[in-house]
Length: 387
Image (cartoon, rainbow, N blue to C red; front, side, top):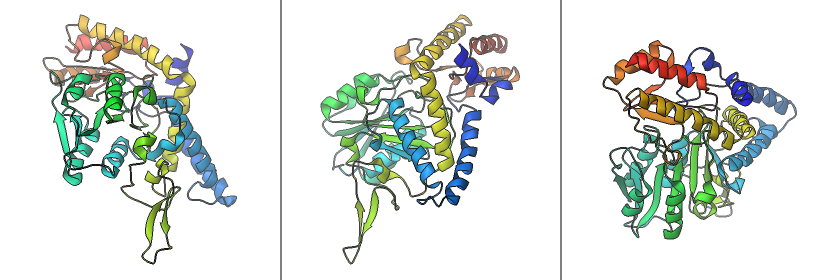
């Protein structure tokens, strides 16, 4: 496909190795780098034109507003008022757990023991600082998170379920549609880390019943490490108070009281969660990355990655490797996790042959929109030699 080759030409790391580690990061893109440079060009013009309102001035704010709209198109949300820019996925989830104003004695939240620290640690912090119960559920067979795992653990005091759409460590995908329907029926907020699925597959936040979606831009969204976003549905957003505050679009100081007071001028605007100075170059990069993903089309990316994924999964199986990640699309996205009798030696063998993958609790090969059939075949040949 021509779009794959065009995109690949804008991912310089592909010129130096067989890069199969997009679940770690995308390795950088030329269009994100160009976007960051454009910010400084625009800043100089804005300064000369006396555009007021903070770094980057009106030109930046206009681009940020367009980016909010694009984020909604990307995740299947209807209003950009629910979008706040953050530094990373963790910050977005922390905003929800630390700012929620409707926890009561005896309330609990559900999270799983294999979650990425960006998800697990805010839940444990909420237990410590908010006085709620954080129920840490053991994954089924140590790896899998069927919807029933959470459904069976929930009770009348469960306020939130917090999970990754796709697990970082093993690539397994959760059934958000089933879980979201359950949460909606029982008045539970579904908080989702989507960094391992956005830019790799279609995402439908409102259709699936997600209450909040948090994601960084440096993996499937092909942007940079410093900028991320949080989207929050209105019914949850009205209950979120900023964990830190500064002058901005939705927060101000009421000076009519001699003692002064802090006021949120629009409880249904996620901008109340933003600090007064945003990461403008990072948002320029996020804009560029999401623009590229939407231009190609998430459905087209998903179909392309699915074809590569199945070839990779089948090829590993033919080598005698049993992937932990399911082959079926209902349980997988873009990463295949597995182990070998000596995984460290296998990793070093792959590395010596120019294959970039992750070696952590499991070995993980992950695909990006820019990967090709040749990448998969090269990796499988290297895997055969590395066993």
